Length: 514
Image (cartoon, rainbow, N blue to C red; front, side, top):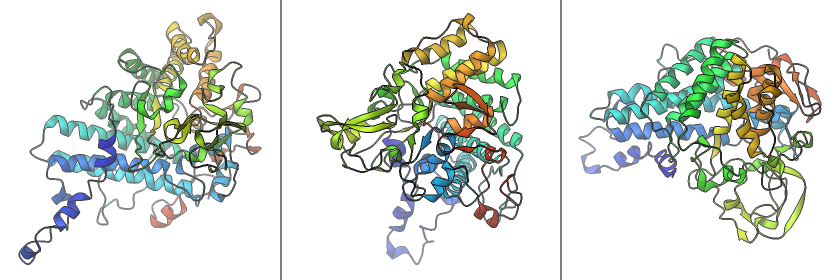
């Protein structure tokens, strides 16, 4: 299903080896064929396919390591207050949990480099593919649409993490005029993100794609999310952009076709169902190339998988967040929802008590085992980026800001809560403010541990208080995981120190990190 992307991502290197193997008897007469350049490489459609596959591959930096017992994705989880660590052996990760990070924190450095590698690969594809001839226009349009999507995806993270960031839209070399680019105002970055996604949604991509490639529904869903973010902090563009977010998410809802919620939460982490139904857009993983990278959610040194006693426990739920789910919420049911507090010895043996709730949302039963069925040890589970559940919540939030609660917004929220086994009040049971907070709370509970919560905190300037069930202002909210209060400086991450040393035009550090 996804082998094309996972395997083809390495093919960008193959021409180097194939050409290097040319008959050596001709070497005195021929130009060195292994000395490839972008000009000599981008000559046939296969080169275009290899180029965009390299963009997909670069995006997997998301799950790469960030020192001992840590992964890059934990940058988006540790500061939220909804998780904690059982190991505390990674000082950079500890700094994220304690809200004391700085420009040398490895996760911050890795995200900057990872995002700009995606951007660089996308820029090369966008610049070089149009000149390839002969090449079918439909194929060319699809590849360019995919590359535009990925560039938008990368910049959307960058602008939310750092604010003003360098906007680089062409391939770079040491002779490029803007080889050391300055930071671009956020609004300009967002405008480019919108433009790229509009190109992607009109590129002739399929509505859904079970292979895991970018689809039209993915482009529209991400664009709806971008509009929702632009409506809130820090741009505060308000009603016009709430309307755009509502309209764009409604396009996905009204034309869903094969897109719908799974009936069971277990289906969300069933590797055989990747890129189907609720999964609109995911990072693709295949154990042959790169296995699922969410293992730091395993409990510390407990035998929940075929590996026996193992796991780092460096991202585990706080008990206060787990207890903040409503009574009867199916998402808290052991091994059925998003958590588990018992499992089977070595993945397939007798049940045992874990002593606390752990995150089941990314646990691959096929790979790790279940009672009486040993695991395959091949973790091919994707990492979800956008689920249909989020699109429903985007629509409910955005439309409420325009019109207050309506039957359609209630219906969107109800789909999420029905699956959780929870009752939803009728339209008359909400006013605009109470419905707003109901949707926010649903985002906290439905999208937990998917890299969404911290970015919601930034755009809303609000944080769910799991003790009161209400929302606090961002600045001053105390994370119960560390008993540390969020400060104004935490609204942005610092620029990586090494990047500032390498680029003298990144001379102004973000506030609070000077």
